[in-house]
Amino acid sequence: MTSHIDETTDVLAATALTVSPETAQRVLAERFGLAATLEPLSGERDCNFRAETADGQRYLLKFTHPAERQAVSDFQVRALMHLATHDPALPIPRVLRDRDGDPAPPLRLDDGRVSHVRLSTFLPGTPLADRVASPRFQFRLGGWLARVDIALADFDHPVRELSMPWDLQRADDLLPQTDSLDDPSRQRIRDLLHRFAEQLRPRLVALPRQPIHNDLNGHNVLFASTADDDTLPEHPAAIIDFGDMLFAPRVIDLAVAAAYQMKGATDPLAGALALIAGYHAHSALDETECALLRGLIETRLAMAITLATHRAGRYPQNADYLLRNTAASRRALEHCLNLPAATFQRRLNEALDSPFHSPGTTGA
Image (cartoon, rainbow, N blue to C red; front, top):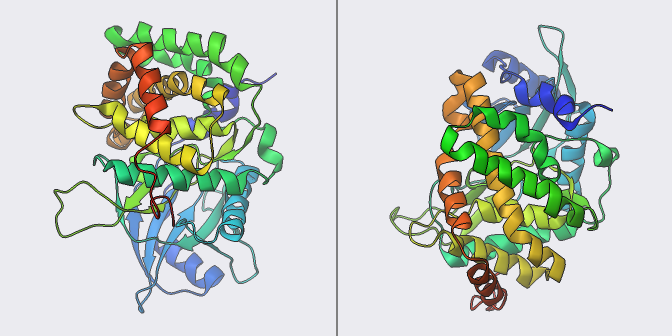
């Protein structure tokens, strides 16, 4: 049987796709009937442009990497369309169909490979990235993530049984890549991945699986800017980039998002707990999910450090992009590992009875 690593190597190991602005403008005009100025955007694998028409309308034009299976691209597009139907107030990108009604038309590249083109609305806002958000922001964002998972719970697709990149359910497949880590962290990361396989995965497999966003890091969360850039972001504006979606228990979605909110200098756990509380307020967590949260957060941080370090070593030209979250992930993991179990449990219990419950806190 082909391993998860073998099945996803082509995508994760592939050099980022390059499409010329001239080709992108031609495709935009021929397939979608739009004339626009284009601005290249960074990306891990795909080639992305921000498109702006003369009347000020803005779009995201995405050329998916040829190494990505067409079924995976279709899964992401159909999931976004499902979300737009089942929770239209959610601030997420809306997919536009081409002139033939295709939401992801194929494009044969100059080298003969096939990419699939997506055009979606470009949402206003500033990426949260390295900013530390306010607890109210994090609580509301948790509520939005819960709404995403609620809306996707009844969505199915043939990729359900396919292996995907960044799959926490198979975290220990990354053990060979830990050779890329420096000596002080290598064994600790290996221990966490072994612990996942032995203790966490047997409990995860008993939980229902559904489509999840799977990558709610700060670069995929937008906030509404204010005149004072020194204040903590208070208002999330959008959730973007559904390119790492997969089928998994919803608690993995929550753990991934919580891991990326552990950025506070004095109390990293506070951001994670505020987000968890917002999710729980919208869709209550059960006892098993609560018991898994800490270990899954630590596993995701270990994965992020391992994958980014390994890939940056192989593709130094893209290292800045690949390593953009790594320092924060290391700090968050250090904090988690030094936290007594009783302290984490007490604070989690307190968060689930959060003081942020108030009218309008979790609304659209």
